[in-house]
Amino acid sequence: MASSITESNRSATLTQKAHSQSRRTVLMGCPVDLLTSAALLKELSHAIDNRARPKVIQFINANKIAQVRHDNDMGRIMWKADYVLTDGQPLLPMARLLGVKVPERIDGIGLMGKLLKLADERRYSVYLLGAKQEVLDTCAAKIRKQYPNLRIAGSRNGYFSEKDTPGVVSHIREAKPDLLFLGMGSPMKERFADRYAAELGATVIQGVGGSFDVMADLVKRAPVWVQRIGMEWLFRVIQEPRRMFWRYTTTNATCLWIFACDLVNPRGRRVQVR
Image (cartoon, rainbow, N blue to C red; front, side):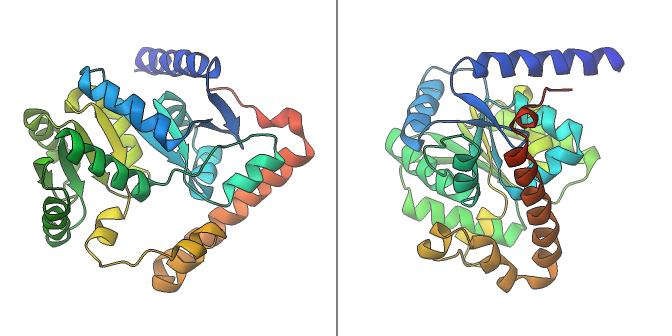
């Protein structure tokens, strides 16, 4: 077990070094890739067309920054990912104050929409994993209607136990999707993508959190102007106060504390994979 952990950390470190020579930097203890959505889509379509090894996409926001601070394994997962993108809008001005110029916000549901459009244009196949079955069915129906040229290779609700996981992984692998969207919560989706990427058979693996609920019109997304001023989290709290209030209160406070510490102590901004 110790040997496998050491090897995993070594692999994560090598990935970190490769990225650090190009576009990857550190923001409040988390890796972040400085690229535009246009550049990202170009790279991902090239990977799919050339049947490249799996590309895992992860995101950072206030919640993830707090998780990484308290969970070394989550930090390893983030550094190991092929792409780490800035989801939270408030992180952009914070990044600028810390000397990191993030070219644009690339959020989970926004990227999912762009990838579905790309799949429709290039006739890629997709697999949907997560949410309740009725939500998943509604989401799949809407995708088929809006993107008639893509193929839904398969779908599976997100309610399965650990003992069911090998069967879920096997089903996805047999479906051979070009893109796999994980509509599961954090940290489940991050751990799933990290652990099974090589076995899933998908070229692009992206966690989309509650995006299936949004697509199924069960949860409303904040208006664009609310997103732009960085208050989308408050919009979520208003819709689901019991579930979201404590989460955002604690993680936002932790993120602000980390930001303040990094602003005062520039030397402490960079961390190493442990």
